[in-house]
Length: 260
Image (cartoon, rainbow, N blue to C red):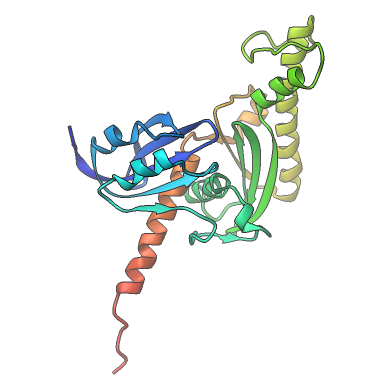
C-alpha cells in the first residue's frame, strides 16, 4: 500500500545494521532497520511511499547484494561520499578518510541548531565526538571504543575476565568481577563523556551538546540539562545534504539573468 505523500528515502548503512528513514520535508515519518549486507528490507519499505529521491551513506562499503537492491529502485539515489557538497565548511585535514556518518551527524546537528557552537556525541559501535563552531566550521573530532567493544575487549584481551552483559547492576565500586567490569566500562564512559563536555565548554561557553547513538548513558542531572537527545541526527544530516545538492542542481539549471 502506498502512502499518499511524496517523501525522501534516507539509507544509513552502519557497522551493524542499516537504517531506512522516510522524510517528509525536514521531519522523519518512519524508520525501519534491515541487514546492511543485503538491504533485504529496502524493497518493501520503498513500496510504502511515493519516494521522489534518496541518499545512501555507508561506513562499510556496499555489497553486491545491497547494490542490486539500490539499482532496483525507481527513483534516483545520491551516494554520499567525501566529494559530495555539504552545507558546512569541512576543515578536516583528510576528508577522504572521514566517516560519512560522522559528517552527516554534524550537518544534522547544525541544521537543528544553526549558528551555534556544537558538540555531537554519538555513542554506538564507537563513541565519536565532533565539533562545529557557530560560523559553520567543522574542525574534526575524536573516536573511542563503544560500550560493547570495551566489554568484549576486556574478555578477549585477558586470560580470565568473563564477557559481561551491559545490563545489570552498576554500583559505584564493583562488589564482584561482573559488576567491577560493568561499572568500569559504563561509569568510565560516563566520566569520559562528561570530561569532554567540561573541556569543550571552557573553549565554547555557550556550547550546545547533542547525544545520539544506541548506547544510553545515565548522566547527572546537571549534565542532562545541557544535552539534546535526537536519534535522527545522522538521518537529518543526510536529508539536509540531499536537499542541499538538489538546490545546487536547480541553480545550475536556472538560466543566467541578462543585464541587457
